[in-house]
Image 1 (spheres, helix red, strand yellow):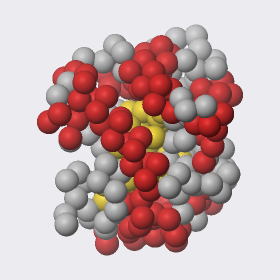
Image 2: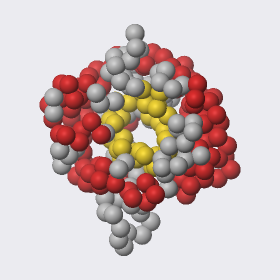
Image 3: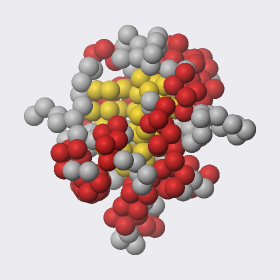
Image 4: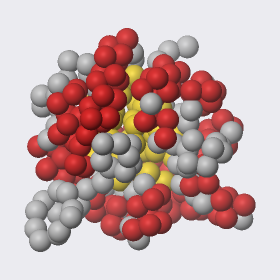
Length: 260
């Protein structure tokens, strides 16, 4: 059965690689991407290597011949200013980005980002022409306490609080259970589908069922080639936000192929 929404598989390289390895990895993904026209591929390298990766992808105006898109891992909510060490959304666009990951659990947990801060960044990213990948997900303690629905609901609605309903089709949502990130654990396809369906229902409550049905929702959390196909088989899982496995071209491409 053909997919209702075009799959999107994004690689979050986090704080890994050097310039040469970043170029090589991007080149390998770009070379294979034309074989997967039914999947949107996105690479999100560390900020210092955005230019290197853009060059390896042959980007012009955010899209190269391979069709692989570039994304940032974070951005500030201001267009410019005295914010040492920060990156403005327009700067990401200027270097060739089309996407930006916002609200990743590591940003929330390690850097104190709140739903209100993420909400401001989402609006700024959209204003600059970026597609935000808005992340939500519960910790192990929250899941074991039966609070998954409450936590995900609060994060999603809080992170989109200032967003007009008309702009919802311009975002991607990523469900990433914190307990599955980098741990080797993965939510079962049933657990992931349950939360993805919850997210789609929340998006419908902000707009309509028809609008929500068109919004892509990724799963993130120890996605690997050997579990990607099962995840891809679920009706509300539209792709993957890939961490460690995105650092190896063969693994990343195998995950993408599962969603093709």
